[in-house]
Length: 404
Image (cartoon, rainbow, N blue to C red; front, side, top):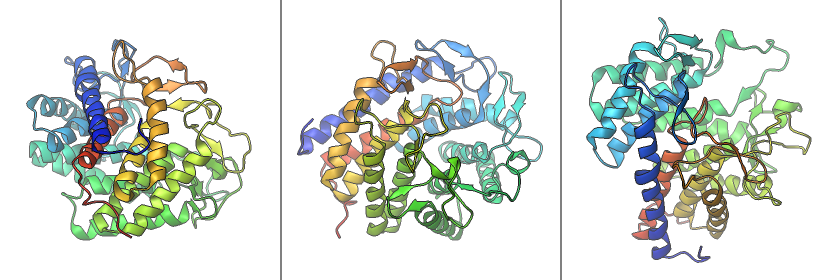
């Protein structure tokens, strides 16, 4: 790839991402994931797209509803995309919640609950999904479901696991970066549906929490867990770095910075992305480590050195957006490195879609295309967002570029 990008470079990249999305990744899920008998989606798909487990995980069900609804709303109003979103939304509206409106974690194929609503993120992705689906379908019931799920998130954010929290109370209280970062993105997604006062209040509070409490100002990296007051806790959880989470959170911050016309926030987010990559890039084999210990101790996660699809895809989004907004050469240099690694290792040219899990050397560790955690979300979302960013750069759209 060229060191000095021009419109031709950007146009070629836009075409690469568009083609992969529309002719490879989406057809894979359209062709293999729909459960035509019971409703909802199969996500446990092997390399060739064959179903190897029929359980249905609420995160992934809602993420697929969101994905096809968002593409319908933002790319093209295709009837088949809306039909796929409706297929999942109808199943989830019937089976996804308990009697109090809390979203389960997992269902069996028929929609009977398997795992209790122990995690706030089921509600987060339900709110995202039904917000976009409501915009696409104009169904009032979908709006009501989205708003009810969003209120669940706001109500539970201080204690996201509620009665299912296994930590002993009071000894070492910690809060997780995952909650404010996903709430920031969720609130942006629901901007069309929320009162302006709620929208701006939540965006302000999440930015403050992410960029103050979780930021290590000396290293310019984000901690995964801190004390309730934002202070560092010297333990496994307190030392944990999740580079993918930190980088993904930063493109959420960039998006908020665009909305609020806040150049300082966008620049700070880019600083953190670049600092995270300097620390998390595997200089021996390439790729981004999954977990690290901030003090250089052995991480508790045995899978710490694996290379995961979503980490690299979210990094591509952050670097493409960071370059579009700031024009900083370091964003482009890192983008080229991450792009080359990702496109050489994750896509499957024989059966389509992307592998999810590589070992440290970049060899395929699991040849599945979907499972309990990987579904129709990170790959197509990143392909779409990178396509969009490079298409705008190719057209010379500098309306979002920072002028400091």
